[in-house]
Amino acid sequence: MIKEKGILFILSGPSGVGKGTVRKALFEKDTELKYSISMTTRQMRQGEQEGIDYFYRSKDEFESMIENNQLLEFAQYVGNYYGTPRDYVEETLESGKDVFLEIEVQGALQVKKNFPEGVFIFLFPPSLDELKNRIVNRGTETEELVKNRLLAAREEIEMMDAYDYVVVNDKIETAVKKVQAIVQSEHCKRQRVAKQYKKILEADLG
Image 1 (cartoon, one colour):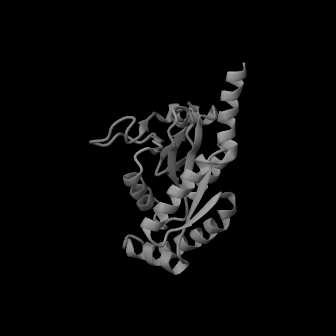
Image 2 (cartoon, rainbow, N blue to C red):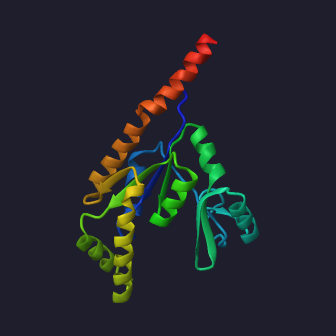
Image 3 (cartoon, rainbow, N blue to C red):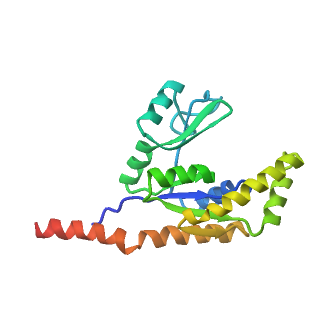
């Protein structure tokens, strides 16, 4: 019996492209995937649980993990750290589960540096006009902020070369099907399967 290791999938793309919506829809269809739990230094809120919503750590503990390269990526928002713990991801992959990370473009580029064997999927807006509509329709942004987000999105789209796959998010259902096809295709890649078979052959012959 081949025991296959899990694969780390990174879903990323410009702000407003619908990463969270696609990820939620994907997880409703595919219960085998594990969502990567982030680590944070912010206080636990009512109703949240350690190891389910986040791994909660002190600032000192988090900074020590940064120094010891124990995070695949991290960022600071409003005075708190957020990041992806390497140990949690690697243990989940070893158990044969795929791990799914939904993240901003800058974070994805950090992961690429620290975990190049991950599979990087860029979620692309159908058009910049559509992206602008989505940002505007949130109703939370001033005109200046919308403009800044669009400029940032243009820059992020130029970073697409760092990714393995591009999925256009025109219809959520179609985007989810494409991501599922990528997951299947990666598990069938000769390089991955061959490694497992070689181990078995060596064990049989040894």
